[in-house]
Every structure is written in structure tokens, then in C-alpha cells.
Amino acid sequence: MSQVMNKMKVLAVDDNRTNLHILQVFLKKLGHDVILAENGEEAVRRFEADAPDLVLLDIMMPIMDGFEAARRIKGMTRERWTPIIFLSALNRDENLVEGLDAGADDYLTKPINFVVLEAKLRSVQRSLGMQQESIDSLRRVQTISDNVLDTIITVDEKGTIASVNRSATRTFGWQVSELIGQNVNILLPEPYRSEHDGYMARYAAKGFGTVIGTERELEALHKDGHHFPVTLGINEIILDNKRMFIGVIRDISDRKIAEQKLHENARLLQAYYDQTQNEQHLAMRLMEKQLHRHGLTDERLKYKVIAAESFSGDIVAASRSPEGRFYALLADATGHGLTAAISALPVLAIFYRLARRNHTVREIILELNQQLKESMPVGRFVAATLVCLDEEARTGEIWVGGTPEAFLFDRWGRSEKVFAPANLPLGIVSNEEMDCQPVNFTWSAESQIVLCSDGLLEARNREGAQFEVSGITNAVANTSPSARFEQIDAALTKHLDGMLATDDVSLMVIDCP
Image (tube, rainbow, N blue to C red; front, top):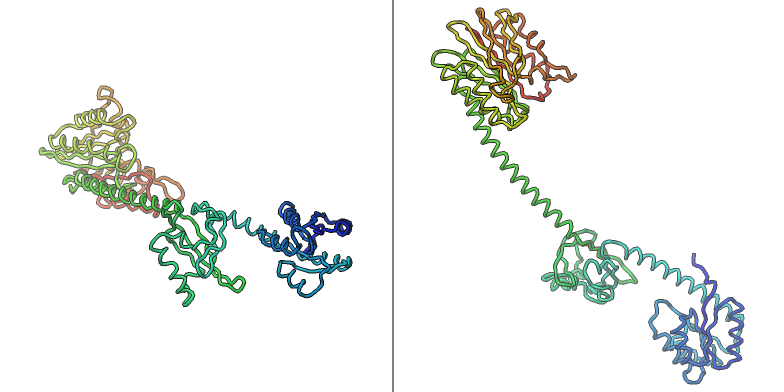
């Protein structure tokens, strides 16, 4: 609901001091502030200096009459409407018409009827109260608009800018006053600038189609000449029976830079991934060539290696010497994955070279330990179990360093011997400190040696229980030698129940002739 102004600032103008004094007393009695002037020229000066809310203006005055004073006052640019009421003894119709044409808003004849004047003042107060409410409302809207981060521009049907918020200065570099009245195409680079007027004309005839109410990306032009990306949303309104368009513009330069950086990072990441994949495939082929040698196809051997990652740090190897001795190796390098697999490669090369030359277990262990101690960094080592079988003499040698115990099972699946891990892994101490003496053993008919890595014994099921040594002994009990490997493998699969092992798993079963 509109409010009445409690107090007005009134400019009273009359060359008769008595009339002026009466007006002053009357207005102050009503609670208003009064500014006095005795002629039109003085009235114009006081209006400009004091910005009154209302002017009570006599017509017949020296120096400058009321008509001229009214025209000059109305000619001054002000944000608000200031009503002018003529007070004059001239009461002919032509005087009334001339006064209204000069800019007056009302006309009272002298002598003044103060009851009527008071009523007119109340009417003016209501009008000024409504005007103030409108101004306050407009200022609130303008304040909100000016503090919106996006640029808001209003243009007419011809593309002329009617209003902009302060964000336009930040976005485009133009001051608000520089943009008002300009064609909006000033904010567009070529060729859009030249095409814009034709676009507006086509809309007047056919409409914008899908542009209204949507947001799109385009290039904008800064005052300094550089182009930058923006989003533009356009809506149409009817204001004072005129079609107007509101454009909301957002500078998306930072977003575009971020997107470009994201795309570049994605490209680099993809390139890195592709390169890594190629390198891993090459490494895989090289590892396959090193790992899968002919000795592993020996009919007396069954084995399995499950890698926790793409590469396994567990390796198995087997070979026969020209003299007929059978060698088998199960090794477990520190960690898992490619680094562990690389650590184990020197072990393979030395094992196959010395096995072909019929070296003893002790000689092979010494050579392996020396090589790893010299080449491996501190904290890296290789646990290993090395077996050599002399099938004609039915005797064997075994050395266990850092890997779990090895087992010799008889034909009924009973444990004949357990070879404990009595030695340090390879690569930790020098040969002088290393105990490289293997354990000698013999076997009965249809016996088998079972080797494994700690990844097998430590494999956990869904309840967190480990497979342990009992998992092996229970699986081989009362089983025939030919089915023993499959029994252990099946027991492990059942134990995991779909779970993945967290470490590399290796298993080797060797038939003793």
C-alpha cells in the first residue's frame, strides 16, 4: 500500500512579500519545510540548489515570470517528478492552458482558498509517496541487478541498449553510460556484428524460433578488442506496449580454460596410459619368454602361479642337466607386480645356466646370492626353494631360504619329511655369512615334493581365515599322487570362494621317480 509523505520541501515563489509570508506560515503549520523566492529567476536558482519536492509558483513576477520559470524548471534533468502548482489572479482559460503548456501540474486562482490548497497538497503528498515507493523499488531492483555476477542487458526491437547492470563494465570494459543508447552489436565481433541488425529485422517478421528462452555459447567483443567466450540467454518481454529483450551474458573464459586444460590432461593421461600399456605388453612378452621355458613341460612337474597384479613376483623354473639330474626352483621376490618380477629375472638366468652345467645346489645358491647381493637395492631380496633330484641314485638335495616349508609326501599322502625354512632369503647377506649347505634326502616309490610361496598359505577367505599348511595337508591326505596337485588347487579355489588373493600365489608338485 502506498504511503503519504509526512513532510515535503516546498519552494514558494511570489513577488508579494505579504502573500509569501502567509504561504510560509500556512505551509509550516502543516509541517512542511519552506524555501522562499521573490521572482522566477531566483526560483530557478533555488530549485537547482535545494531540489524541493513541490513548487508553488506565482505567474506575474518581475525579472522572470512564472511561465518561463516553469519551463526552465521542467527542462532540468532530474530522477523524479516535481509537481508545479500555479497560484495566480489570472483566471481566464487561456491563462490556464498556457500554464499547463509551460509544465504546470495544477492551477489555483487567487485569492487562495487554503482549504482547497491543503487538499491539493495532500493529493500531491500521496502522489509523491507513490513515486518514492516506485523509486525505492527500482533502486532495490537495480542494486540486485548491479550485484549479479552476470551481465544483464535490455535492448529494444532495433537492438538499441536501453539498460545494463554494472557487471557489463567488468565483462566488456565499457562504462554503463557508454553503452546506453548504443546498438548491442557493439559487443559482438565480426561477422556477427554485421549480421545482427538483419537478424533483428528477421525476428520482427518471423520470430527467433528456438533462441528465446534458451542459452547458447558465442564469441563476444571486449572494449579493448579481444574476443572471449560467453553464454547468452535471451528472453522477450512487453513493456509499455513495446517489445523488449533481456539478455543475460556470462563470461566463461575461465571455464573454457579449465575445459581446455582438462582435455589436455586427459590427452596426456591417455597417451601416458597407452605408452604404459605398450611397455607393459612388451615387458609381459619378455617375461613370458623368460618364464615359460621348456623345462617346465617336464612330465614329472605340475605348477601354478597366480599373480596379484599384471606381473608376478613369484617364479617357477625347471631344467635337466645333460647328466640327467632334475632341477626345480620356486622363488618369491619382495613385493609383487612388475618391480618384483624384474627382481626375479636374474635368478632365472643364473638358474638355467648353472643347471645345464650340472652344478650342485650349493654352487647355484652361492652364485644366486652373490648376484642379488651386488645388484639388488637394500630392502629387496628373493626368497627361494631349490631342489635337485638324482633320479638314478634316488637321492636329492633341497635348500629353503625364506619361503615356507617344503613337504615330501608318500604315495598315501602322508608327510614323510618337512624341510623347514632354515636359511635367509637370497641377497641379504654376503656369501661368507650365508649358510648354503642343502639338506640331503631320499624317497620311496611314488613320493612327491610340494613347494609353495607364502601367498598360498596366507590366502584369506571371506571370513579372513588363512589357507595355512593345514590346507595343503588336508587336501593331499588319502589322495593318489596323480590327483594331488588338482586336489590342492581345488581346495584353494574353494577356500577363496571368489575372493582375489592379495599376494602372488605359486604351487609346485614334483613326482619323485
